[in-house]
Amino acid sequence: MNTIQNLVRENIRKMSAYAVADVPASFIKLDAMELPCRFPESLRRELAAELAEAEINRYPNAAACGLQPLLRDVFGIPAAARIVLGNGSDELIQLLTLLLAKPGAKMLALDPGFVMYRHNAALFGMEYVGVPLNADFTLNLPAVLAALAEHRPALVFLAYPNNPTGVGFAREDVQAVIDAAPGVVVVDEAYGAFSGGSFLPQAGGMEKLVLLRTLSKTGFAGLRLGYACCHPVLADELEKIVPPYNMNRLSLAAAAFALRHYGWVAEQIDMLKQERARLASALAALPGVCVFPSEANFLTVRVADAAFVFDKLKENGILIKKLHGTHPLLEGCLRFTVGSPEENRRVCAVLQTVCR
Ligand SMILES: *Cc1c(COP(=O)(O)O)cnc(C)c1O
Image (cartoon, rainbow, N blue to C red; front, side, top):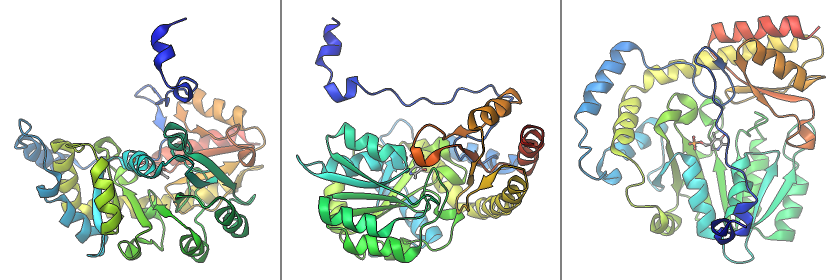
């Protein structure tokens, strides 16, 4: 037997690597909730000029780069909250898990939910408690409260709105979970820009509450910029395990540029929300297609034969996410990132020939 493999931790040996979709450039890519467009040419030139000035010979200084005041300004982050930057919010999910993974400590999250929560629990040896959603993908509050009381999790992850379902939970249900949780609660607002009712105004108000956000779903997935807004007590602990220089100078500079031109971003968000409504009614009008209400930049739908529809779209150069088979509640489900008007039209055109 291979000796190096024998040295690798047992639980990791059984895992498989996250598969990043490798699609031809001609494909319409609607699998990963990316924004369908980039800054217009003139802004891209300006950005290039700023990046040319970045001192990439020097280690980055995230605290002094000016990004944090911009984040506070643009998103209204309370003064009471500290901001911890992550290389994508994925890094912060990993670090928060590492921070709280004492022997015997548990993580609670909702299923189906964002796969990285469970993955990180496994990575750091936390016992994972998954509480099933209701069949309509709403939060089952009695079940969550019962699980909190029974398992006393050190860490709760709650995506608001939820991925991969798109459904936004009732605000009072989320508040009830925050209030009842005995440990840290991370409200992951990766899709917060597309929904109403953020919990961001509460950030910094409670030691146990962390608001997790990212620039990824609003146009900058390639920058890898996530941020956690938390109480200073938690921020002090979290900062001990953030790798030094985790954020690179080019990303920091580009993110600051993006925030200084947030008007363009806000326009894209408005466009996508309109497209979401249009796509939802177009899909709902197709025979045998059930569309779940979404507060995110994607739509989760149920069809009779998810594999067939997924394959037909792929044959036509459109990549979406097949959720069917990943969780019993996702039987027959597919997830469509909301694309540009033209992309959405092409999706509908293919589906009209497939769903009949
Ligand atoms: C996409 C996503 C993330 C990860 O975002 P990055 O900042 O790109 O790492 C985190 N949470 C949820 C729920 C997501 O869907």
